Length: 367
Ligand code: THG
Image 1 (cartoon, protein in one colour):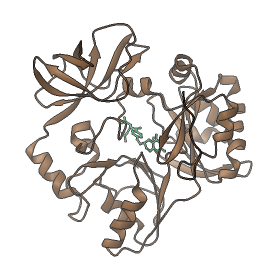
Image 2: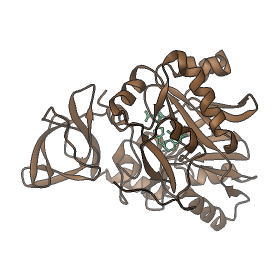
Image 3: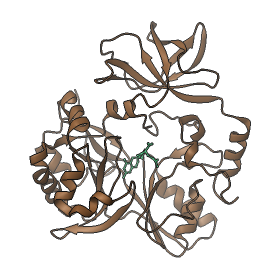
Image 4: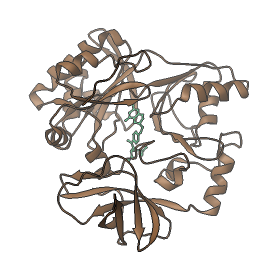
């Protein structure tokens, strides 16, 4: 194997030292940072998310802060989702599109105040984008990156762990809502959110120098519940139908193709970036759709993380954008970006290096 050359262009997370102590053994790059992906026990890490509780360094979900009198206007101009009812303390999942209606990120928006928002972004540069749009529209808003690093606590026992640290009020926190708080002088935003469907919270640490202290506090509080280290989990998220921007999308994907149409409001104002294109795409009907793909074979099959052609006979009907061994379904499963006339139940063939693998299209989520 090879190493990674450290560089200021590939920033380590403030939790780097803590994850090293936990035995992190693989990273990916995301938003020009290093994200832990494995602690060496993939199946154990999976079942911990399904049955227990797991803590993840997701500082790579970097924050784009919008601050100033026009912060709310800029947020709405960037997101084709109606934000007029979004309250202080509320978060929303907001697909971002370019002027052609192409998906360019899928952040969680946090409204911290009437004049202060964070976009907790997926893997693409939204500081450039937000600054450019703000400047072109003449808006009074400052776009910056605050010292914020999310730590996710995910799994059915996450609520007990977080309640034991912060109190029972966290049990009433609604999905994507958050509160600014602190623990032993460590400032953070506590949100009910996270990239799994097993329930959980995210602690947006607001002082990177206290990262090891926060990691250790969560670890200590989680001990009675069997907490251990983990990372955003490909198997769980594919079973649960969560998309990965840049993994399941390419430079031509619009939100309607990947089941994000419910987060697009076509009646937002005409000055929202991409809204005219989105109305047109919606009116014409999409050419592709995202469906589940279940391979016939029942042994773990490495497909590698690049797209593979999906065929009906000689005709290429789309792409398999990811594929994992599902520990619960005992099948290899993935997402297909396939022609609109395909339907769940259809038989297809996935081509892998000249090898044809039989498969069936499925509705999402799998579980
Ligand atoms: N946490 C934080 N920031 C993030 C992510 C995160 N930024 C990038 C990336 N992950 C954003 N992607 C998603 C995608 C889906 C969800 C969360 C983050 C999600 N979706 C639910 C669903 O699709 O069922 C619910 C959405 C809803 O109904 O509003 O949870 O993980 N901080």
